[in-house]
Image (cartoon, rainbow, N blue to C red; front, side, top):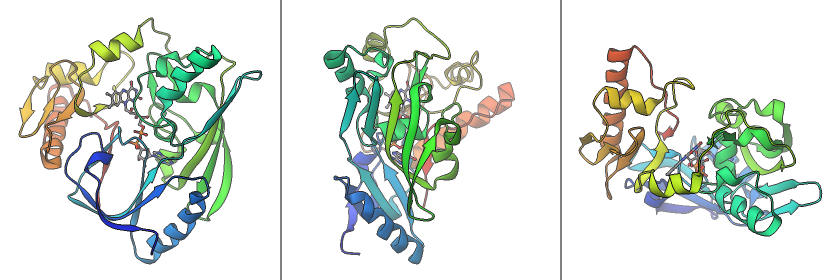
Length: 292
Ligand SMILES: Cc1cc2nc3c(=O)[nH]c(=O)nc-3n(C[C@H](O)[C@H](O)[C@H](O)COP(=O)(O)OP(=O)(O)OC[C@H]3O[C@@H](n4cnc5c(N)ncnc54)[C@H](O)[C@@H]3O)c2cc1C
C-alpha cells in the first residue's frame, strides 16, 4: 500500500520510550484521512496484520522490538466550544489538557480544571475513561462519532452504548472502533468522588517525571491503592535492569532512557507475584501492553 510508510522508528510513540520499530505506519493529519482507514483495514485483514491507533502514547507499553502490523498515529486536532449551550466538540487527537486550559482562559469554563496536566489525547481519554482527582472522562460525555472497523461504517454511540467503567469503555472492550470525534456537555457538574486538590501543583511537584505512562496498575478498590500494595511488598523505588518503580509514587513504572521493554515486563510480573503472595490480590494492568 503506497500510503503506508515502512520500517519506521516508533520509540517516541510510547512514553516509556523503549526502542521500537513498526513494519507499517500511517498518520492521520486531516479529517479526510479517516476515509483511508477503511482501505488500511482491508489491507490489514488481507495480510493478517494488527492495527494500533496511537494518540499521545501515554498509556501504552510496546512489548516488541518491531511491531509486525500497522501503527496509525492520530493527529486530528481541531475542536469547537459552543459557549451558549456549553457543548464541546473535539476531534480525537487533541490534547485534553490543552483544551481544558484554553476553556478556562478563553471561555471561563472551569469544569475541566482537573484535566489540566492530564497527559494524552481526547481519544485516549475516552478509550480508557481517564480520570483524575474525582473527575472522569465519562462524566460529561454526550456522544461519540466512531468508525466501525468491522463494517467500515460511521456510527454514533451514546453514553449508554459506551459502557464506561473504571478505566474502560466499549472502545477498549471490543477494539473494533476508531474514535473520530466526541461531544461533551459541560453544563453539568457530575463528579463521582469529589476531592479537594490543587491538581496543577500536585502534578508539577508530587508526580515523578521521566519515561512513564503514569499509574501502571488499577487500584484494586477506592480505598486500596496499587501504590500502597507495591510499597508494602518492598518494590517502591526498586530497580530491575532499566526498569523501576518510582520512589515518589510506587505505582509509577519508569524506564531509563534507551530502556528495554523486557525489564519492564519482568518487573510487572514480579510486582504481581509478590502482591498475590503477600496480599492475595491480583493486580490488573491499567496500561495496555501492546504485543505482536
Ligand atoms: C505522568 C502521567 C500521569 C498520568 N495521570 C493519569 C491520571 O491521573 N489519570 C488517568 O486516567 N490517566 C493518567 N495517565 C495515563 C494517560 O494520561 C491516560 O490514560 C490518557 O488518557 C491516555 O491518552 P493517550 O492519547 O496518550 O492514549 P494512547 O497511549 O495513545 O492510547 C491508549 C489506548 O487508547 C487507544 N486509542 C487512542 N486514541 C484512540 C482513538 N481515537 N480511537 C480508538 N482507540 C484509541 C490506543 O489504541 C491505546 O490502546 C497519566 C500518564 C502519565 C504519563
